[in-house]
Amino acid sequence: MVWQTLKRWYHMLGSPRYFHTFSSRVLPWLTPIALLTLVTGLVWGLAFAPSDYQQGNSYRIIFIHVPASSGALMGYMALGVSGLVAVVWRMKMAEVMLKAIAPFGAALAAISLITGSLWGKPTWGTYWQWDARMTSMLILLFMYVGVIALQNVIREPRQAARAAGLLAIVGVINVVIVKYSVEWVQTLHQGSTLKLFGESTINPAMKYPLLISMLGMWLLYAVNVLIRARSEVEWRERRSKWVQTLIREGDK
Amino acid sequence: MTAFRAALSRELLVLWRSPAEIINPLFFFVMVISLFPLAISPKPETLALIAPGVLWVAALLAVMLSLDGLFRRDQESGVLEQLLTSPVMTVVPVTAKLLAHWLLTGLPLVLVSPVLAHMLQLPDRVLGVVMLSLLLGTPALTVIGAIGSALTVGLNRGGILLAVLVLPLYIPVLIFGAGVIRTAVEGGPVSGVLAILGALLALTASLGPLAVAAGLKISSGN
Image (cartoon, rainbow over all chains, first blue to last red; front, side, top):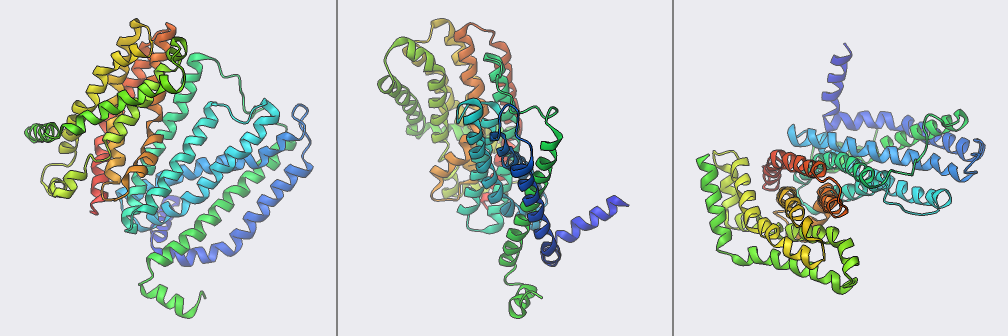
């Protein structure tokens, strides 16, 4: 039952036109929910959560840092999946998604690196360490940049999307290998003395606002992807009848 | 198999007749390495410290630059189109091409590396490890770089884009390649890291040509 429904959704959302009407129904309520969730999480975390007994208030950057990092990672995984679908099945919507997912993900990776280094200064006394997690996030940013650059430089949009899709697939494998290679090399020479944070030991008063801001960031990412995908769909289908009618009569 | 052998001998012949493409990467490798003692310090202890990384970064850049035009001539002359439409699976000639390219541009780097490692004041006992690490690593670099080369073959300004696409993909090979030499210098056991390098080579050599073939198909627009 569930499988059947999912399959139907998959095929329906694969149609650019259906996606367009679907997203115009979803966005009006998803956007406020996303913003509300993110603001709730951030305000709770930044203003009301207790300060850490060791790090004082500086730890509060986690309410931006962790959502951004997780968003960047999930975005790249989504990029890989869209790439696979675009290269293997040549589905139009997957090609659109490839283009829609990348920019926000790159921005989140950059935010994650910047907030991380700002957090690193007061806690570790350094802005940057070639630690496994930081290095892999930097490589992730490079991979995002590569996907975006390749998409921009190829003229034909379908071809650009499939080229970027192939790169995204290779990139997913690479990011996984980089993550472990950096960890292994570190353990080969010196034990990692840095623990970013103990997840199990986090205080519930800090955990809930963190989870809420993460959820808010993911929803905001989804909103961003939908908006980008909509304009991309409109552009790609600009010669089709339904977009022509849309232009003449306005949205709704 | 005969198709593979025919493609291999063709590629070797074509490359052999344009010796600049074989010699330039080699000279680039030697020149980049000779810049470091001049730029950083000619002191033996400093050189020995940076040598593993310098050797590997230079090898990586040399391989990458040699790949910029990997498919360009074939594309301009229409050979690429023939390959893609021929009844033979694209992977076969692509693999032959990569093998030929590595034999004539990657292998020379491996062969000359002990001399350069010696000039960088690495102890003689690690020269074998230097060669072995490059022997396992450079084919992987060739294959990975070829993916980028295939994706950018139709573009005029491919060069800098190729670097942006390929360098992040090179990082794992670089880490383990330089790591092996460093471990050997410190006197640690190298077989484990060499095995990982071998595993990376096996992964890229088995899946890479498929990605290269797919990339060529995408670039040619079908």
